[in-house]
Length: 504
Image (tube, rainbow, N blue to C red; front, side):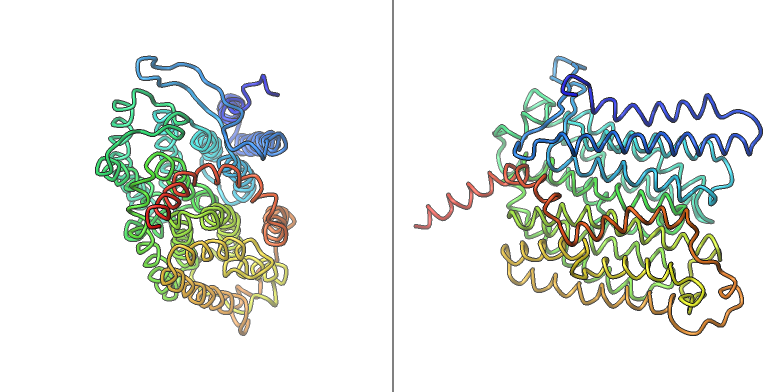
């Protein structure tokens, strides 16, 4: 396996699947739709199985990049097709490859028009997501990072709700505007350092003055903050989620939001450590505002998807708080929180999709008492609701506990303020569950609703297993990232040691 271009194969497989759908899906509309779904599901399942080999073959003691491939692209500035994974990125690749087949299964009966194009868009999106997490060249990363917008724009704009075009353009323009500044920062790094090799840039001292570092840091921050999304550039997210089809919301919350946090870990901290340290308090304050403000806004929501979208902004606030605590516990917690949120938020959007497929409304007031007709649904909903509020024994608890612990280590008052978000989070999720599941079953259409089908249970099964596994035994996930996180934090540990020595 060492001699195989393993990551290139992983990127290429979904593209081959998309091409196969375009070529093989022929005949009448029903046949085309059936063939497209079968090919997409088979292809994405194969990609997931292949990606598991990354997990199996990964050397957990090595803090560097593994499975590295390099093919020269533009030799003058050392720009190349350069890919590889470390203990951080390998987990996000697995997250993307797990959620894609589940999204395709969830859309099996929900998508009625242009099914072939829908499946092609999802497979192309999967290839671009994998490419973003494995890219080790500045230009290649930018290409993948931006190209992800195109299939997601189409998924929202073509298969979304009534205001889908408005939401798709808002999503596209917000994220593109931030990324223009990132392009300027990338060009600056290439021209000043003479290379686009991210491995060299991460390992070496760039020799940049602190004021230049801060300008570059702000340029990267503009892009990653929108992608997360951080307050106050989060307003595109609720609109995008409300109008996106269920599978679009799953992949948006589960994977695309994580690209912002991944960008901070791959660019801001290792390449611009002085600026990251100088701006840490600024990010911590924005994170606190996001946690508290969006949790209060979530309390007022009447649309289930909008409530979960605002909860995602609050949970991403914990991620940025953990990353910019700049300590081992905080950064490990932030990565774990991103993974757990990827699974939990994906499940919550799928849960909304289950009842939306039956009643075609997301308004909370239209539901109530469905535990009587949908007991299996009520149990699965309860598990993921509890995981979202951080119940011990679930994945949500481990990530939140570690990020809060890291925040307390960095700044006690920041940690105390962040802890208040747990109470608010529990409040809006428990209210949502009570209003939808409990109460009197009075409406006739609710009485006629059928419980979850075997296909729907099959979709939730791996997510249930993961949430409990990560909550009860998190060490396999923490072990694989720990060496890479330790290497990432070396500049900050050295800076702290130097500060202590100078004070003595």
